[in-house]
Length: 222
Image (cartoon, rainbow, N blue to C red; front, top):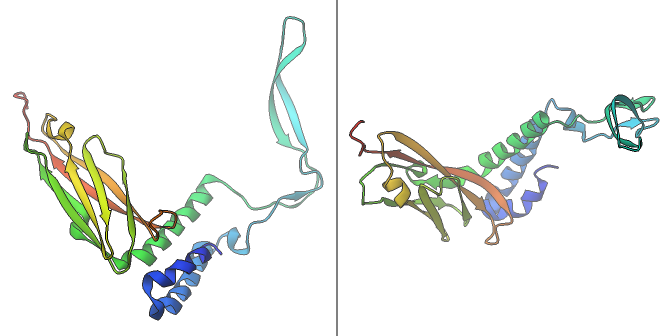
């Protein structure tokens, strides 16, 4: 089952008193993810009498100076005979829907055990020559290990320190941002990926942090 591999450390995260309840919730959530999907009964192979046979429709032929065949431009279609089982459809839309549902399950399970100080959000107004620096805590009921994913590293620097009952996130305004010009309000995001182990191999969930930043104009034309 999709979530079964997480059971081995779920019990340690929420404590023995809640393990039975949480395992029941895992089963219910698995059913919710797959309900109404052809995946409910598992993945199926495509079965036909000649599974690998294809028909090529030649659209163009390219030959070298000696007249030898160099390249063919073709359209390809299946010519596999009798199909007794069409198999499970696999496309980006279906797979992404399943993946997003799984991420939603992880959030549903683990985020109730987290408290985000100020919703992991800061709002800064630019003071040139005085870059901002702020600490925010993610309080946890059991030890988690945080790892920063920062797509805005040119403008904000984010690090975290892991402690037994909380993760301290340090957000720093970079000199590039502090010295930027113009008058505007921008939003920079970063993420803290949470793991159940210090080696960062047992991924649990992700929380989002935000820096709302207002530039004060240094351009006379503004």
